[in-house]
Length: 258
Image (cartoon, rainbow, N blue to C red; front, side):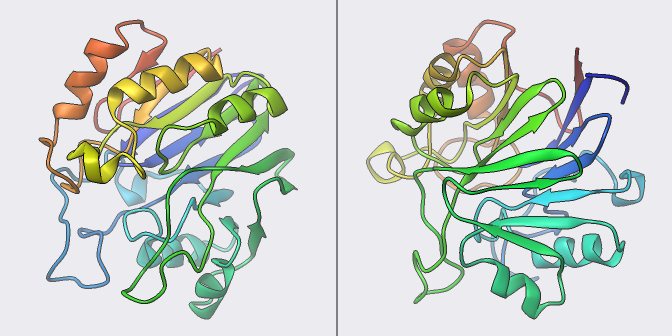
């Protein structure tokens, strides 16, 4: 990338490649066939990753928002660590898991913490969700979003979150994002999912509250995690956010922002 250009590619699900002049960043990277601790059971991909592994550029930073299997995929993180250059940023309590698999260097942040890496400042910001990787470890580690200060402004990656006051708090603290990556899927039935996942209508409201110049939808179209159809979130977003300022990219689609 040149100058203050920002390029973002939706790999699929919540995996996003963010490219600036100074660094290549992967958010919540998963290339595994299933979002599961097992290879024979658990949510399986409806679509292959939009970028083949061998076509990835050298990755400088990997951001992991929480420890659910569709966001923290150990086989993918081990492959990134094997490249010898990638650094990992995770919420409080998650570093131990990565280090136990020789995934390092890893930087662990609490809400409100920040770290400077590759010439960018990465802020750990609140989300409304939960964590677990088994039956007996619920909420023993933190979950979060990340707001990264780049040359062309703040890039906000929300990870998994429900709708709440934290969007206004993030804007008040850090300013309106140049780019927001907002989840729109896994929201049905609402009586059960509304406390942990936004629907497309709420994501459109979050976009407005943040004042993001551009938002891109994540967390849809790949794993069947709830009752709505695999492509329903994208169609619903078009009804609630008809403006070009909030886009649902296709599998592997990229956009360059000046």
